[in-house]
Image 1 (cartoon, rainbow, N blue to C red):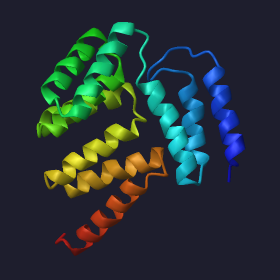
Image 2 (image 1 turned 60 degrees about the vertical axis):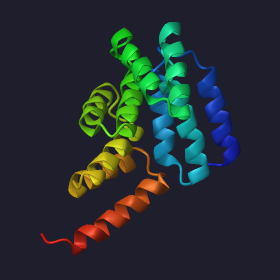
Image 3 (image 1 turned 60 degrees about the horizontal axis):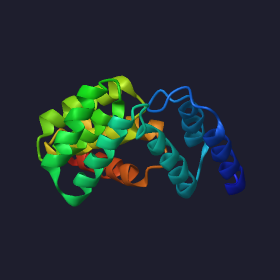
Image 4 (image 1 turned 90 degrees about the vertical axis):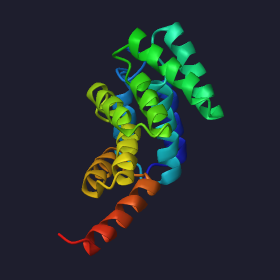
Length: 184
């Protein structure tokens, strides 16, 4: 078990290191994902997750970062059309920026446009295969449309990347129980 002080020092050192590139290509991510595999506490994992999300949300382009901020604020207010426009712009301005695709996938999900959401999640995962958030979202879509085995598979993949996801762990267990009762 990693002590909280050790975790804090590690995260501080990683934050102080010069990044090769912001976004999913940031050199600090490998160490953070390794720490995520080693951690045994949900609280500790949440701290590491926050560091990962902070990196994923940044690009090397101020205009893209501004659109990301606009899109997230709009999404949080329920202004999904504005959010979708912002994330559309990001995917055009920075097509290799995984979080632009992921945020647009989230917006499509909230709009009930599952096919579009899945397409954007697939693009997110091409750019960042470790994106446990995108995998979690894909599982939600598959569960919503009755593709339980597919949901289980992507949630297990998410859990293999980020073992301290209690919500996903519970969904997996519930789905396994459901599938045991389902005809083969």
